[in-house]
Figure 1 (cartoon, rainbow, N blue to C red):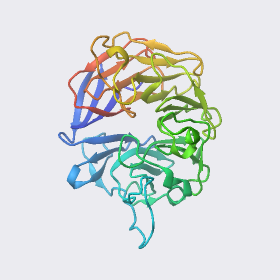
Figure 2 (figure 1 turned 135 degrees about the vertical axis):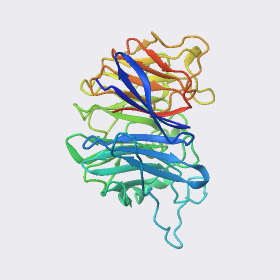
Figure 3 (figure 1 turned 90 degrees about the horizontal axis):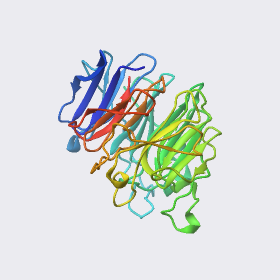
Figure 4 (figure 1 turned 90 degrees about the vertical axis):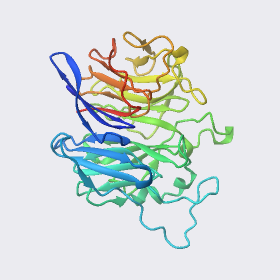
Length: 363
């Protein structure tokens, strides 16, 4: 099991370590600054932290010594928009060609992939010193149907690499659906099978306007991918080409975060809530839902979690499971952090006083 957790928050990055059965904050970085995401290279352990500094824009940092020292990298940026190019959002406003936030980071076979609010997918082959826009996705005709889901601009929030084929990726876009490449990003196809209750009936099944909040892939069985959608849960059994609906999930179908078991394709966890205007746990009770049969049934796990007047919302990157499949952690928008040592059967609160939590990742 992993004994280190990195927690990205609105006011810094926190590292927790487990020693002698106790979790404690061992290190802090960027205190006072919003850290939208943290990622770790599986090959060499390099840490990457994405910051959004308001007027000073998006920044990217890297650490090769576990977070003691951070070096500045080049943040991804769009090329200059060609003169006279007509490029508008569905509401007719100009598409700004601007990175508003780094929303996904993955290291795949030496390539650093970055998804952004702004709709651009970028890749770096020199560890973040330079970036190129993935034009195969950006120039796809269906991209102009994307629109913002929770943000003013569309955002790429999930990058799911195939563990055995670095050229195969599935990405999730809010609101733009799920997309698959098999040639390292040169060509893309949109996934089918999702439906969107928020769209007019004639556009309900349009694959390019779906809002998958988060995608999670089973590492040992990469054909199995889970999606927490705005209006339910979906599952792919063919590496992201098509999706089947999971119509029921207790206590609700809405949520942002979903995690896939690393070795058992039938196990997944999610943190449910009430959707749309409310967005807080059902009945004010924080719970985790777990399926162990591919989505046919869901258990509601509540031991150790607050069950009265608890309004913690878990955002899409704020749930993680380690390589053992037994240790999980999730955090909330109100600064609470919980860990489970037994696959979610019971939970222990590690902190109730962190800043709003954006992302949780095991090292």
